[in-house]
Length: 338
Image 1 (cartoon, helix red, strand yellow):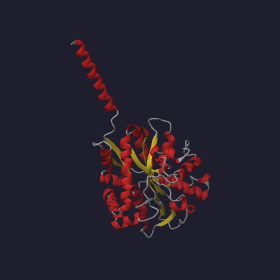
Image 2: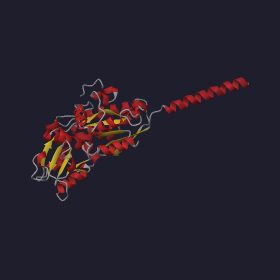
Image 3: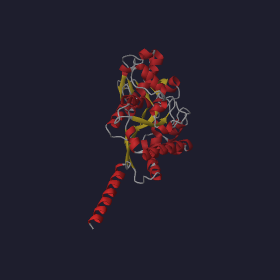
Image 4: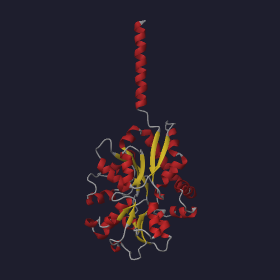
């Protein structure tokens, strides 16, 4: 009896250990995702609106996954939230991601990895100052609004444009003029003409909304200066992807479905943007923005090494990837990226 009782105890203990191990390796039931204000985040808005992460997680055997969505803008803010453990997946400007990848590379708890590109679209540097026709015309009296100083998408694109205009040694020439404001706040300030803000480096739809005002002129178009490169990416902590391989796969599948939806259904995509963003635009205006051939939604990175090479030469990052795929999850290595 004693021997049988002891064997039963051993079996129960082994089963308990097995159950504990199974729980330890269970994937997260809640995933926290952020997106910003503008049209560049449209795939994430489609994913949110249609519950695509939940759909693909269920197909992969994770039936109880829920998503918590957060509205965040500016690379600095997004990076801080990720490192503080308040985010699992985030859409952000490619330069902000490269900055964080470089700083955190080799630090297990802080290492980040790209899940894919997000969007490509021209950014416009708009001004209400009639004396400004080119970058060289800005003076100390001007203030250029961007979402985050030095590391936001707009900040780095402005530095890259300055390097082309004034030489790499003068890449930071316009930095003293920059002011950190969210895109909606910056647009309001620029159009009012009653604040220190005389320029705004911004993305759709804000760039289009500002251009409707006859007092506003465009100084540069980022695509004309730098080419049609990936503007935004999606990334996560590397540890999150390793602990949650199926959930990571579900998100990536959700993004592919969202991209296909946008490509096939411009009307529906525009409706989704208006519904999620709650921006006061017409359906026609948003569809027109989506019809711009320079506005594209693809998870395959394009020319992200442009950021790496510039930021390395400028000294704003110390550690750099040897090739673009070093920045992203292994599943993307077979893509024709750059």
